[in-house]
Amino acid sequence: MTAQTPLRTPFTARTTAAEIVDGVDLTGRRMIVTGGASGIGAETVRALAGAGADVTVAVRTMSSADALVAEFPERVRAATLDLADLSSVDAFVAGWDGPLHALVANAGIMALPTRQLSPMGWELQLATNYLGHFALALGLHDNLRAAGTARVVVVSSGAHLREAFDFDDPQFERQPYDPWSAYGRSKTADVLLAVGIARRWAADGVTANALNPGYINTNLQRHMDDETLRAFGVLDEAGNRIDLEYYKTPAQGASTSVLLAASPLVEGVTGRYFDDNQEAEVVVGGPEATGGVAAHALDVAAADRLWTYAEQALAAR
Image (tube, rainbow, N blue to C red):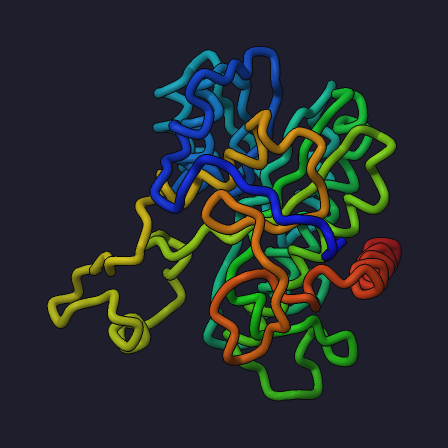
């Protein structure tokens, strides 16, 4: 999966989500965007619905999607989904009827300052960012297959570069908890999820790819304290957010998600990782890595092992 020539598109890091689907007709396509009520999720929904898709915004709080539903009353609906609670995932799946053309696994949490656990006892970042989306995709597999051709899009992060998945202690039960290590591992798991789906569901017409949206000021940073935000250079002394030169707008940050969910340019492409609307180069990864996709995140053996680990977790409920 790492030997192919990286795919190139005419788009750039500054392309907006709406520009990706300019001229693309998504009428009749049914799509789900998790965490789609704010940030890049909301811009993903706007672009897909604006191109004619029927989009379900899967959120923990229904009212958070009111503005999007009001903006696209004929094309956008909201449904309750708490990815950390697998009973909520089950209820969402049970409430979905008919084909599903695209699942955008966008929701996530980042850098929780202390180790927190999901109702299943999983470290909360791994539970939310990875396991909930795994269970959701698995539960909707028949609906994706029924679409004829369908796409799964998994929003990862450049943070995956620094952390391979730790199969020996995935829940930080023995080693000291570190917010950024936990986040990085969950995002490696997200790429491995796309690889796992690509390996298993190709015959069903389902493709899966992962992506790095880039640096964007959104609610994802809500668990970071002011001192940390200032250290990152994105908060001034008065408490105002600062958009650094290399930061994207939410509309720009959503563009790669929309590319993978809807663009004809990536039809049939699967098991890959994209950054700035281009397929990323494979790199070694590690603390010094600054771009590309780490080989440990595309490792087929790791993807298979993680798939089995997640299946066992679901079976043990």
